[in-house]
Length: 258
Image 1 (cartoon, helix red, strand yellow):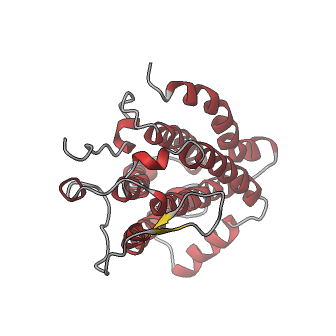
Image 2 (cartoon, rainbow, N blue to C red):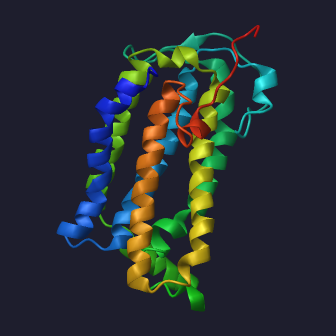
Image 3 (cartoon, rainbow, N blue to C red):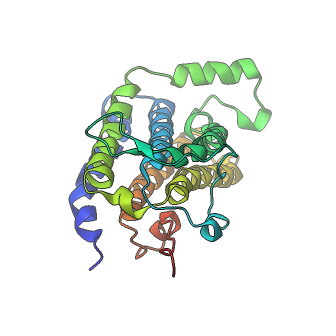
């Protein structure tokens, strides 16, 4: 049995429940679909920031040959400083060498996260009128309407659970010792590229569906996809390649000397 199987079994109910919160808001609390999908979009943005931050704690030395094949934006060319600092006693040391991986990767993933916004806001709004095109002012009004403070309660719970699991497993159980910074930097890039691909694929069916049907399809796709990604990230922290979808998020790297 894979080492991640117990983790999946114990965390799946919690991950499922918190990811159902925006759907429950639509079903029971009369949320608009665009509000629910907006909550998912913001939660994914926080997840991206979290995994970019986890790059700082990765303990393994990066392997240049493996880095060239890694899906991330790379490290900036600044003097490489050795050593580490531990600003807070209850978190692992931050390695100076890992800071080089933040600027380009953070800019890359945030840019493409913004690119995926139509899937989470425009496609879930029946008034978007994509077939006729939209003026900038009309699109801005749709995004403003989707922004609902009540949705941030769901965002806080979704991200809070993710933060708790990451702290318990990645930091508390010293999983960061198994990763190099390039291995960790690959995950936010893969998360964003997955959602960009979903945005492009759904654009192919948007015009073929009536607005009420489109809203249901978008909400279902976003919920199932986010649940699958969140569970895959649990597998990735355990370096578990047993799942066909999860395998794409597992940044394997040979040990030095292999």
